[in-house]
Length: 467
Image 1 (cartoon, rainbow, N blue to C red):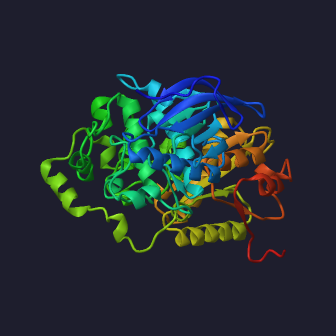
Image 2: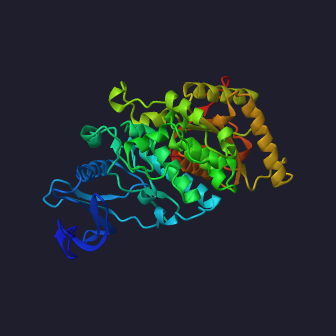
Image 3: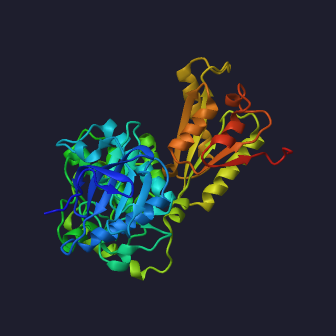
């Protein structure tokens, strides 16, 4: 019988309250402390001769990693004492929607799935930029705050590039929740952030259909099947789902990580702007591959075991290799030299980053007196056509592009919001002396973007323009 801490027990100034949950590795309690106004939760590992070793290893991993993580997508760490006679870790108690309670027969609406897909991908991307990989993403480990942000919890199986990987040292076999584990994890690979993407795909499949795409495997042989088998296509179970949603989810669950999105940031971008998702044959697939195709895939893709890999690459380095660039400009620029300089700069940057994506953005002032503004819809259409014409001259593939025309009374804020929401890595802007039309009303737009944008800014000027 499990031994629980009694309510009122004092541990290093924390007062134990109600017992909340017991899992395979730990007990959870509500706790309070006079110095903290936050709602707190204490995790206590299960100890004893009959308890599995992965429980204490996972507890030590979480105590090591949580202090290194920041942001709204992880619980705030309060205190950790893994070496005490009664080891514990105390963190913020995250309030919100428990994702596992949303699983239902028939699945969620497309709107809900799209919002959740974006939120979970954004949370994972934030983690990867901090050199960490969760490696156990599933509905049980996701909480959606009231503002729609996803919070990842339970970092017991996680990996961080700056700390020893205790699970890799203990055991090179697969570690994680078997329905969600990525094929490369089955081979013991624990340092690829695209493994989290696979688990996101499984989670969304389950939320969309109420079913797990690979069932609940109980043996290593059963887990290995996902190296060559693919699940029943979503639209065979939910014909109401659009092809782009199936394209995204099946891309996430590609057996070979090289065939998934290059980063969870780009995955979030796909959910934010699904119209820009390039569709392949998988988008309309309605049945599983045949036996010959499965055998071909099994022969073609064999994950390289972790111990055989020669050059380790950190999660943040992988993310940096697949950046999202945002070029902000007015396609009706009167200066051809500046337009050419901007195109040249964009092409040169994209050539240096072959896995990158480009978003092209124009913000129309909602209160503009531009003579072209005969009507809002006509103006929007004119700018959209001009954007397409400008982009065609870049000669880059459509799957790397998205184009957006927004209207806002505050162009600077709209640019900053887009960059923040989509985890943009670099904003590319023109540095003309005479601001483009959508900057004319407020000459501080460029200054505000430079000062407030959550990323780097690249200013482009025409060659013949003096500084």
